[in-house]
Image (cartoon, rainbow, N blue to C red):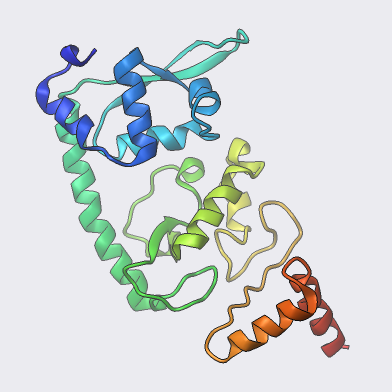
Length: 237
């Protein structure tokens, strides 16, 4: 398969070191294509489009088409597109990187260097930019309006990604549903991934960490949340 591609394209493929996109690339190099079913069953990627997007974000063109799966149903398959397109995609990707740095700085200047979900201040280098409404649902949006983006700590970003991918709206793709969700607008929400719940994040710092250990000693890790709720309930009576 390698002989079918020009050297500069192969060098680009080899430059990708991140596990998920590299897995997709190596599979296509070996077999000529990869299916959504293989991404799920062989590699455990429950949302194939995300793995595919990882590859495309490295400036590598992929073509999506349909084939028949093992159960007879039509499934998505992916193969490399025209290697000549790689240079165009790389230029676009480089441009977005510069814009994203400016976008991040604009968000920090307006809201401070803090996570939108956990409200914790942190090193701005650790903060990550994310679409309030997932890209997979709202599609591509311009970066001129910073209000459609949010700053997240790495842990909050992972939690949001997992929750969104397991939400019923991941299939329905209704942006209005997301607008009312905690993970998109934690400052003003009506539900959490469709569930009538509310979240208050409690972070213990400095001398407060002693209180945390006392809480764990009294209630244990598994019942700490229940104990905090009970204390609040008794206090608000």
